[in-house]
Length: 335
Image (cartoon, rainbow, N blue to C red; front, side, top):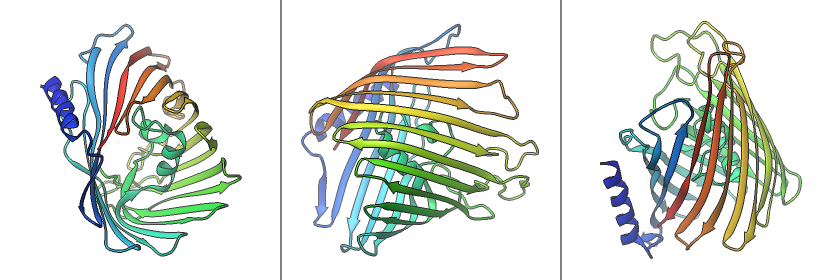
């Protein structure tokens, strides 16, 4: 069934070829983006149905953008994924917001919109169709959430803050208090950024009758360079009680991510990334995870990007040591 679904996606892609976007009206646009990979996954000293060559539908976005004027616009993005040996997800609304552009520096959004730090980090790291950045990859953040969002940008400094539910876009729900995420970026030059971010709230874990013992907090800092096809950067993340708001025990985690990429030729780039995470500093202090990726991507057409990628992840603790290797082709389709 899954291979049949993958074939249907390719058929749809073929039918849409040559139609990067459809203008429904002068101020309305429909578009889509698909992340599909076909890869060989191997897990040392372990047998699983997910091993071997199999396809994954990482993301299937359908976008609707509508503008009433230069100041007011509506954005809706549906999101579906189908990972190997799993059922397809429900249809999520990754974006569903109204935006008001007060002037060239200030913008407000109401609804399910991008969160300040995750949106910023994803744009600096790049290669989202291969894997998300450090925080969402390790379940330390959601990319979008329901709430009120504000952003300020100028040449030297950017700032964004979101007052949100904390439930994330996949299972939107309202808790007993408002969560806050913010990010501040100093644009040291046209290529170098120094950025920091903060999150605080209960992430709806105290909803209804659930007790509240702790407040979830996350702090991020990143230094990055991005200019003329070259990206280099490093990010650090630390959090307290991210999953322990309604549990007696306290816990914390931290991690680092280092990335680099370079456009060798107009249509070809090489990229590399390494993550190291300490997922449970207090409850399982010996547990460590690391992740490595290297690849070459090719902008085959205006609609298709193809990457040849190798990945390795490793989990190490007193009771487990496991290595996972994956190699294959990752693609991004834009219609």
